[in-house]
Length: 276
Image (cartoon, rainbow, N blue to C red; front, side, top):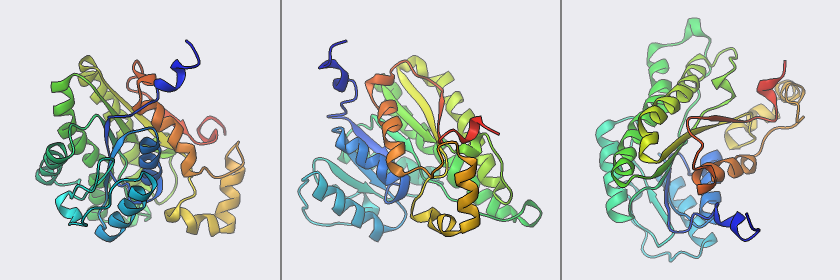
C-alpha cells in the first residue's frame, strides 16, 4: 500500500452519516470527526435549542450556507454538509417518519451511529420499573428501532456502516446503574445479531465501548475528588478519556478501512476492562 492510498481508505466524502444524540458530548465529537473526514452529517437531539446551536457551530466549521433557520422538529435541511433532525428514538412510528424524512431531504444514510443514551443512578432494590424501562428503551430498544429502519435502505443498496455505542459497562458492573449496565450489555449482542443477519449485504455493524470520558455530563464525577481518584487509579492509562479519544475508532469503523470488521465491540477505555 502506498502512502497516497492510506488516507483514502478513511475518506468519507460524499457519504451521509446520521448520529443520534449528537448535540453534545461523545455524539457531537463523533459527528464532528466524520464531517472533518468529508461526510455530510445529520445531527440529532431531543433539545431543539441545543441542537440548533450545534448545527450552527458545525455550519460555521464546515462553511455550510446558513440559510433560513427552520424547525429542527421537521428535520430542516441547512446546507450541503450539515443537517439536523429531531425525532423520538423510542417510538417506532416516529423513527420511521424521521428516517424517511432524512433520506428524502438529505439522501440515503450510509453511516449510522447509535449514540443516544441516558443514565439513571438508583440501587436495584429502590429502582422503579418505569425507570428501568425508560433506560432500556432509550439505550437499547432505540438502537434496534433506528438500526432496523436505516438498515432497510442499506440492505436494498447493498452497503452500509452501523456503529452502536456501548460502554465499559458492557463488560463491567457498578452499584446503582443496573439498567444502564444491562442496556450496554445488550448493545453488544444486538451488534452481533445485526451482523449475523446483515453482513451478507455488505453492511458492517460494530460497537465502540468508551470508558470514563470527561464530558459535560460527567463533570460532576470529575469534580468528585474521591471518585476522580478511583478512576485515575483504576485506569492503567491514569487519566479520564476525552471525546477526541473516541473519534479515531469511530472514523475507522465508518470508513472503508474496516470493510471486513464485523460484529466487534472495540473498548476505548485506557485499559480499564483488561486489568484487575
